[in-house]
Image 1 (spheres, one colour):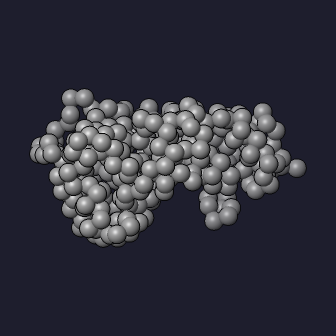
Image 2: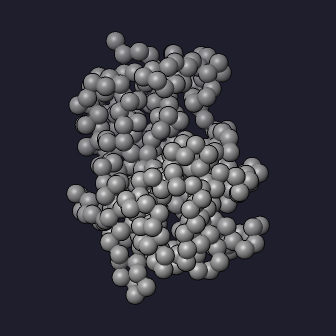
Image 3: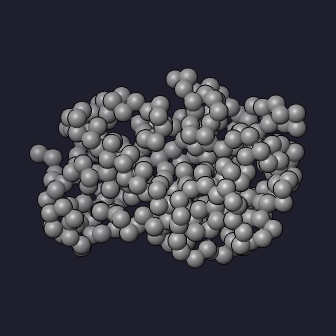
Length: 316
C-alpha cells in the first residue's frame, strides 16, 4: 500500500505536469472508482470539465487538486484522490516515451508497468496530456469535496496555497513531513493512550501517512517493540520515535519510495527502490543490522510486525 513517501513522490511528479492545465473531458471506465462522488459521474464531469487545476496538495495519504473556473476564480471545491491499496496516478503524453524537461522528483528504477491494465478513469487535459487512474484492487478513487478551513489556521498541507482543506480530508492529522506538525503535542497524545504504540502510529488521527512499512522501520530505529503501550513510553522516547519515522520517510522519498511489486509506481510508471534499504520490514529470518540477532515476524491485531527480539524488548 502506498504510504506517505510514495504519495508525496506522486504529488511531486504531478505538480509540474498538471498545475495550470484545464480539464477538457473526463473518461470514466469503471464507476466504482468514483463511488465516493456525490451525484455520481454527471456531477464529477460537471465539476471538472473546463476547470483549471491550480495546485496539487497532500496531507498524509490524501492528494487533492485545487480547482478554478474559466475566469480563474476558486470554485470552492477540490478534486480529491486516494490511492488505496494499489492505486496509481500516471501522466500520459502524446509521446508515451517522453519525459518533461522540468520533471520533478527522484530517479527511480524498474520497468514501467503496462499503462493500459486496470485503467479506471482518465482526465484529458488541454495540452494533449492525460492523467490515468489505475487501480487493480479498487480501494482508491477520485471525487470532489468542498473546501473548509483547517482548525489551526496553518497551510493545509504540502503544496497547498492556503489553510483550506477538502472536507473529506479534514479529519486526519497532519503528517511528519508537514512543517506545521507539533511533534511534542503528538508525543503527549500518544503517551495519553494505552493502545499499542504501533496501532497509534497507524491510526491517522494522531499523525497521518504512516503505514506498516515505515512504522516497523521507525520502531526498529527507536528500539521500541510494536506492542508497547503508548502510556508506558516517556516523552523523550516518543519524540525519538517520531523523529525516526520522519527521517526514514525522508530517506525513502529521496529514492522514490518503496516498491515491492508493480502496485506502486510514480507518475512515469517506474518503481522506487527504498526496499533495498529497509532494516526491519520484510526481513524476518535475517540478522539485525545492529546486533546480529535474527529478526522475527509477529502478527498483532491482524498486521505483521517485524522486529529484533534483542533490540526491541517487550515492555515490563
